[in-house]
Image (cartoon, rainbow, N blue to C red):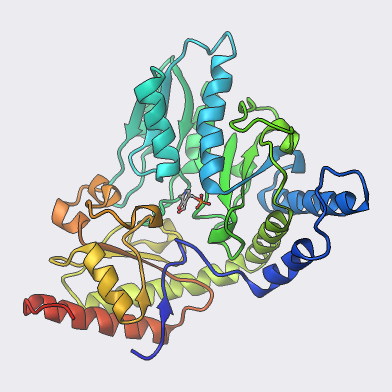
Length: 394
Ligand code: PLP
């Protein structure tokens, strides 16, 4: 293995050169505080509002429907905790305590729900998924009750890439007047996102998954839907939804990254889907014991995501072995990369524990080529031969 191969774009991406260029002035000369009323402040304010308009346009939203946050995690927390707090403040919903989410959410959604369940007296339904990791509309329908006030279903799963039927779920919930949040952190810039087609009230985004900077994201809040109660109080920035001096350079970089991703989306997703197919076929041919996690129909999968289990290997050990060979992959959510538990996502698809323990996510990006994937397939093959021979991995 000569080179270093990065196949962890679902964890994070490098900054696109255009993004670095767009951000630079706001890190160097145009460093004003957007709340200041002098020319420095005005310049920063203009850049911030232009960034908001750009992000909104990419989503089919209005600029005043976007709250910039410190990333996907904060956007998810603001949606789940902020909206439930707002519901408690309304007399007609204050007594209703049923929430619905899925068993495959990222911890940035799952943990706020667990908190509400454990400490705030909510009943939470965690919807299961099918063998490909997809929630069924019928399950959402049957889980609804008179008490249901908020539903959160991610647009696509971060480990196995399964795309959820957000449009249909949103339509159903709208008929029942129930608020709907979706975490689109893994799909923004990869799949078309139109908040009106998706029928969502709230949508979470993060810049660093789409060649933008870390530490910036946004929550879309539909104008006519219930506004969340802020989680962070202070100077009233972001229309009071998120106090704190705005990360101007970050927001400018986010907007540039999303604009670039939207402009090349069709072409790039075709390229990534071809690479996905090539890699899946290559792995299955060379390592027939490998088990594909998530949809095999690539139209149901985020472009660039591949997730395999390699029994009897153990996910973490394989990721470390791959790293020694110059290949960066992941066991799933980067936030959990120190734990050795089986993947709850793979378990949720009905696979047994040894398979859920052996899962590795490969996520491709702008610079991924067939040649790189050939090298990775060869590396996996040699690692699996060692496993079979029960040789120590060195
Ligand atoms: N939601 C999903 C689906 C994710 O994959 C991630 C990041 O891994 C997050 C939320 C958190 O986003 P951020 O890293 O911007 O806080």
